[in-house]
Length: 212
Image (cartoon, rainbow, N blue to C red):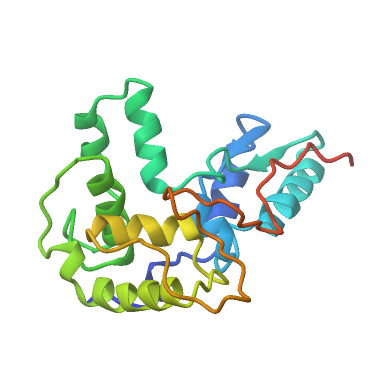
């Protein structure tokens, strides 16, 4: 069975292992954590602190400046696919990739990554076959409740506003501004789906090479 909370889909320390292996071949190492992941910072090895600490540790271990970073930390998965298409990567190549965590199925439709992939591909006009429709899985329905609550309360303490809007648009739901108290700052532009006045204190910046 798939853990709908997503905890079973976290392989502890994998990015440190991959970064260490990569450091044997180069000094500019990419671990692709997107905006949504870096925003909430819940994954220990996909965070600003991890990138900074891993860069310094590997620089010392390999006796040369080494940088661990995410070149896509400022965009969502949907925006990443859009960029890939814009750069000329064939959609068939994109659809040949696999992100599912099921031990035997290529696309179970029940896990966290299948849902995220469904949102990203749907927004780019791509369609895939899943064993279970990702938008109707137990995880998706529970996640959608949280997304709706966050949007209605204009609470972006966990979910980035762009991520919330993408999920709502994928479900073809209303993304107009919810009614909020007059003394609350309006964070989302009423005339577009882009973030307007939202400022994230830990805006993504590529870490510089550390001296050692």
